[in-house]
Image: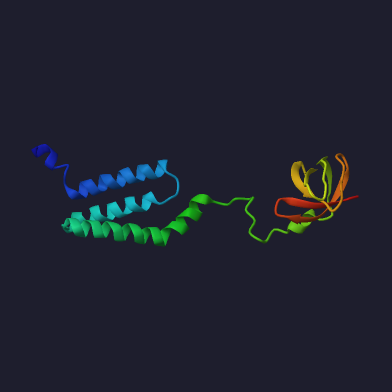
Length: 152
């Protein structure tokens, strides 16, 4: 039992718990578990300098984990997420669609939207009247992922 006593020191246990939590963060997405790993390492470092009771260790673990999670998660998440070109930040002018032409690939009726081919992609399209497949249409408006069109 004596050789294991060296490995059962609280600071080593907290260090290995933090390491285990960090590996768990790599498996489970969300960037949350890593902050609990940080909390475990804080407890290990403090306990190495000044012995703590079990209650003090748990309190420090919870405080360090939650505080680091609250203060740093959004900043780190933005750092790891990076720039996404398809994200609309409001500065993109969606009016560039208006006036462009598209080709109907699925019949459009007033009650049932159809599909149009526009800039190499297919889009759901709505119109006030019935438009046959193969017709050329003009985009008059864009509502989310649906184009409002009219016959040319």
